[in-house]
Length: 533
Image (cartoon, rainbow, N blue to C red; front, side):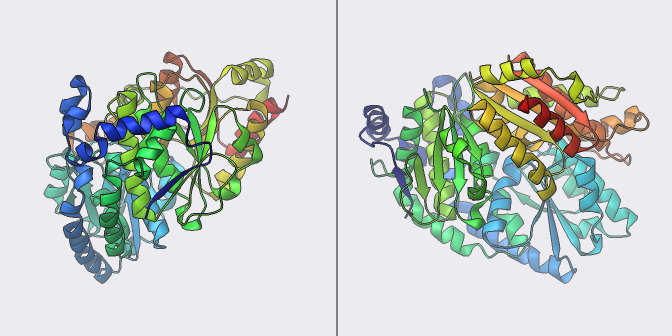
């Protein structure tokens, strides 16, 4: 049974008042009934189309059965490696489930050319790919599909047998998949991406990779009664009330999984909570961090609480919160709590109005005939005093890193984050782009908190300008559902995403330090040198 524990006085009047407000208004029961009148009048139409996740049971069993059948066909083809192309809600839950179930699932949620090349370089004869996009127009996944189609064709392999698509009905991606004979799993259009853990987006990829998820659904079904009950013993309502009651002083929280198989739980919670609540000058910023990387400075950072997410109840830490439970209980507890926190904040937790701003800025750059400006800098160009002042003035600091996501990158970046913790004495987040654009990017642009952002683009300078046709291929395809034989220009795409996001962050009043270069280690060294002054 899921359990929420508060290790600060749970008789705190603001906490008790928020919890009682949720119970007295029948929030949990009305949410289960998908009652749109929970939300403000201007939000009801959209919210009514985004609460289908509370009825996950209706399609889950059929989805699992069909996914198991499809897995058998892929195995008959010799496909031992499953690649999932998707960003944000289209991949985070699936990656977490696969890790929890100890099955191999390669997740490609980057547009970095080195990472794309690494995934495509593996044996395609034993590879099947899943293209996951709710809208069917996601820039990253449209480009990745194009690359896999070209790679399969070059290797003389039938893409028809090896490409699986997960998308909403009637999207451009579904149209393309139908034309090419790909296997399609339609998602529920009434479920937003970040609430889709127990739908096709979360269930199909790990099943194709070998997971048996029947027990996960049994656990989820068992948790429903507890988490949709209007009671002050409901852990989801307790969690929402605790976060809400302390937002004035604790707007960020280090989310710390304590089990090895749950290391990616923090990433999933980051997107769910930050993208759902970080808008209209409000919100809570979770910072997922593995247990072994937590420092004393993290636990003592200003404006920050600590949320432990163990599977089993453990000895109480000195402060913060703990949300214990199996994976299904974690999914549902956090989903209900996030919706409840949105209700307490009087916002619509199911939209993401500020995410589109960075996408639009990147598209404008991609569709231009010029390469995006890449400012190759060195430490001599950095004003240490100015940067120190910017850090001191910020409510929080974030590294936005556009580099391959691997152990080598993390080994470089984590010591830098720890070094900055000692300087900033404030929450410090580490985000990989472009993934965070679909996640915490909403909080960065929609909350009232002022951030200092260090944007690192580890990318070799282009040798020759890309043609206009090659540059716009992915963006145009995303809008039309058509495909082009020109290879996507990933260097331009990721540079445009980094540049576009920095532009929007500055427009929203944040300070952004942009550094670009071919070598991430050199960029990290430059930042470390400035911070140490």
